[in-house]
Image 1 (cartoon, rainbow, N blue to C red):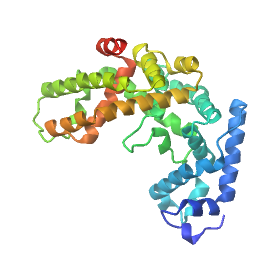
Image 2 (cartoon, rainbow, N blue to C red):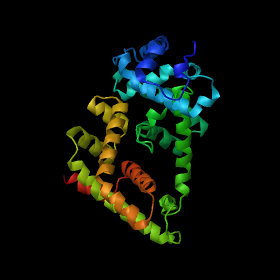
Image 3 (tube, one colour):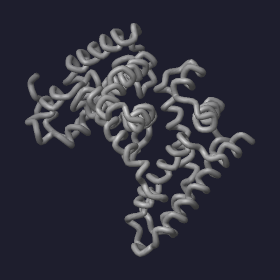
Image 4 (tube, rainbow, N blue to C red):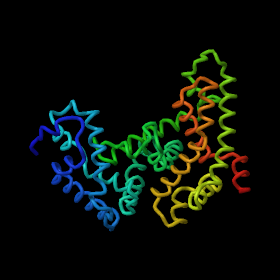
Length: 311
């Protein structure tokens, strides 16, 4: 592919991107369609043009990060897995066939690789079970984790890498001392705060978040309320919820992410109060809230179940 000087820079407009790389993008889309049909026997229903914006966003973000390794924007485009970037875009567009193939690769390729790496230990099993929901969880970039895939490797390889890190974190979890998430307050201005005081602070956050979760549930739509009840209260696995609702596991993960975001949004005033009262950064408090919500999903307290069950 001949380099276009106008694209030999970090940014370019989407129409210019699409026009210049029309053949390349079309080939990537066709490879995606073949991949999805082989995996599911179904066709991708979302049209290629609906995937351009995400494709452009991912490629330009990747070029900003890795562009120094190549001599042109075109060379960078040639180096990435455009077909898998479009796959991610299709999943984010709720294309059922693409989402089904995405869940299939996790079940048949990614999860076995993680389990084998850690000798089928229990913490690895927990990590593989948690992986789909983590992929759709909004991270510090305010994007779902899946949207951060830059195409530098295959989607399978990227997912395995995330799974490895999740398993390592799970392996460390049992060894944590009581109040093991105190480290999120390591950046507090009052550096001499005692560990017990920090634990008390976190317990206050936990209790308040539980109450705000109940408030948020009241405002959710019926599908979100149902998913909340099944995953948090009834503790059903995502696959069971997906079967019950006749949707894909990826869709269940997206709904769970929506639920979490609504709870976080509802706790905005509380986050601001904690930031001011304890001198912690907003990022550290939000990270702690995410951790509490993860724990709420896997080990909901009796009080949360009782409050939600009364609604």
